[in-house]
Image 1: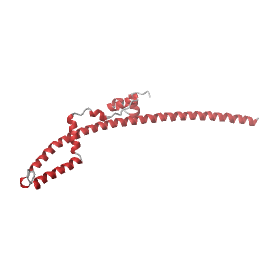
Image 2 (image 1 turned 45 degrees about the vertical axis):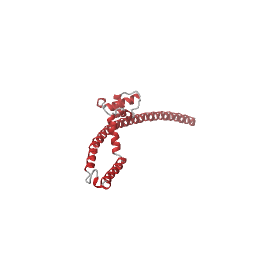
Image 3 (image 1 turned 30 degrees about the vertical axis):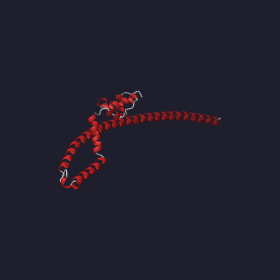
Image 4 (image 1 turned 180 degrees about the horizontal axis):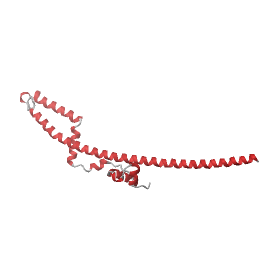
Length: 186
């Protein structure tokens, strides 16, 4: 396939080459060069994460798990039990559990922004994944159109060959018919 990016843009995308996005231009160039566009995005993004990013992801992963929820419920039950029943009047944090509320508020105040940082990073990663998926899908669609075009050319060549064969056979039948006609008249 000796095509250029502008020819492919006009033929398969039905677009003016000047109106192509960088992604579309890259996909068409990879088609011309016969190179794949698929790549492992995880490898590319893994090297870009700093220590703070990894910590935020770990906190979000732990904070959003059933293990954390169930262990925190167990902690609350132990706290309340220890301060209410076991320690009685000498409890560390008596009934309205004001110190426990303070601890819970501080945990929530710290955990929420860290989880939001992780979610923002995941949203950015999802956008990169979506752009890469579009790029791979566009390349696949272009390759399928190229295969259809090749099949159409093959079919057209076969039809022309069959037409030529039919003309040749018709001519042969005509000559045979003429010979038979001339032999029957003699």
